[in-house]
Image (cartoon, rainbow, N blue to C red):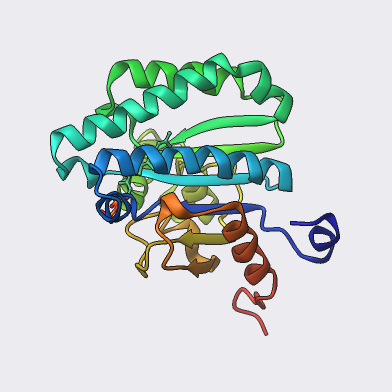
Length: 243
Ligand code: FPP
């Protein structure tokens, strides 16, 4: 996007991306599904860097859902290996990422993830927590319903402990107990690959999000496509229930 264009549009603060279509892309190319995820992970890196350049505050990528464990074991382990690669690369590139002001954060249920992945996430999160201009949220073993259940349990614990009255539970308590606590709600949610659903992604936070759908398969998604989505978003009239 040119600087001139950037000045004209209103940038979303937070963009959510459902990285869909890797399997179909691989099939089209006569490759294994895991190759589709590998190509998808490459595009993920390109889009992260480009979003940082544009000045987007936060990007959330849906990389693995609470339902994705149902996939064949070799596919699940190939995806986990891609996370390992990315996390260890991010550790190596710590200085570079810091210079870009990139903070990496995890959202989801860590309990079922391999221990080495959890340790790498913890390390990266604590080291990149301070100065940042863009937050990259990786949603892995993430499900919106699971997130809400987790928040309800946290609130119930406070009620049980006498720290909060049930009548006083507010929207802030719910927001504050989500994995995304402290982040703005997504302004824009992008789903490629010709599917028109949210698939349990940020279901609470998406109450007023704008949606951008496209037939492009995620491994074919380019920075130009991100530009198109942002320009379309910028032309929408968001009313948040008002007039
Ligand atoms: C959905 O496409 C994609 C996934 C379930 C996995 C996405 C994971 C990656 C892009 C790798 C992530 C790695 C990092 C480092 C973030 P699909 O397999 O459902 O595609 P299909 O609908 O065409 O079969």
